[in-house]
Picture (cartoon, rainbow, N blue to C red):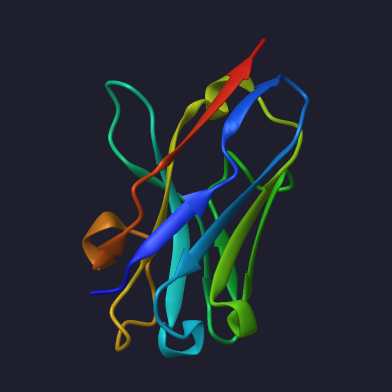
Length: 124
């Protein structure tokens, strides 16, 4: 089981920016697909963005053009740059990794490892 540790959450006003980081306990190049999910109170966990080892990225429509996912395998790390934040982005954000054999990870069922979560709160 891969251990994932997030950091970088916090409170910000609408229009502001935050950068989330996630460090994996294993070499990141051994993980094909990694991503960020979020869960707001009373809602289901949803995918925000994913990136595979070839650098192919996917984004939820709600964050396209505002969020950027990236990974730095040399540091076993995954990042999420969030700009132009909106109140509806408020949620617990989770770093996620799929099993090494899975090439996609854009649904909850694809995920085998989760971080503990980091809270993002955007005030309007």
